Amino acid sequence: MNDLADPNGTPTPVGRDRRRHSLRTAVVLALACGVVAAAVVLWWPRTMVVRVVDQPPEVVYADGSAHFAVLTHVRAPIAAVRPSQDVSSAVNHYAVVLGRDPGGSYGHRVRLDATGMDPTELTVEWTADGVWLSYPSGHRVFVPATHFTGGR
Image (cartoon, rainbow, N blue to C red; front, side, top):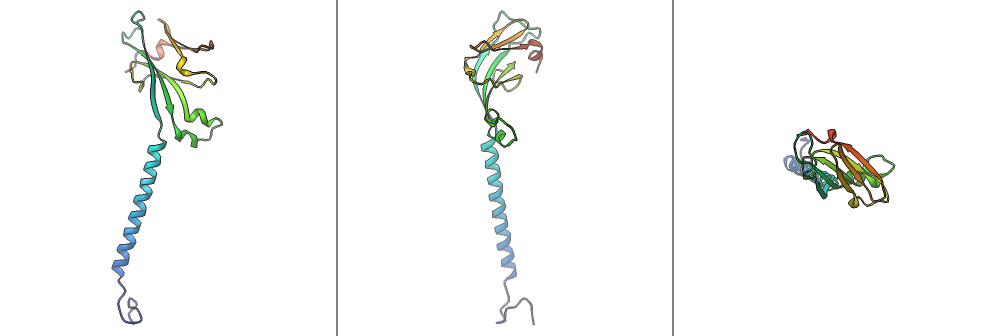
């Protein structure tokens, strides 16, 4: 007897079943890829420029370029999946980018993780030797000019 026939003698539609299975597989694969793509887009780090402080004209560095101190707010939900003791600062933190780019996408990055202080109250003092980043509390960070001059 023919293995492809049912007991009544009607052949089983093998080609149609294969097409249905292929279509289901393609739909499931497309949905899975869509979910992964959406997760990556939603969890990708986002940086927002909070404030830009221009180098004053009286301060000139060896490269002769204008420089900027760009305060950025970084929201990086994907950092929460990393094994870290302090997930909140990995997910949500501020940074100052010193360099030629007023958009803050390139330069010397200084991450600000000081707790109990408002990063928007940060003051920037440009000197011939570099930049002082200061909080109203008195905390200060110095970045030598050699770290943010001479870049692209």
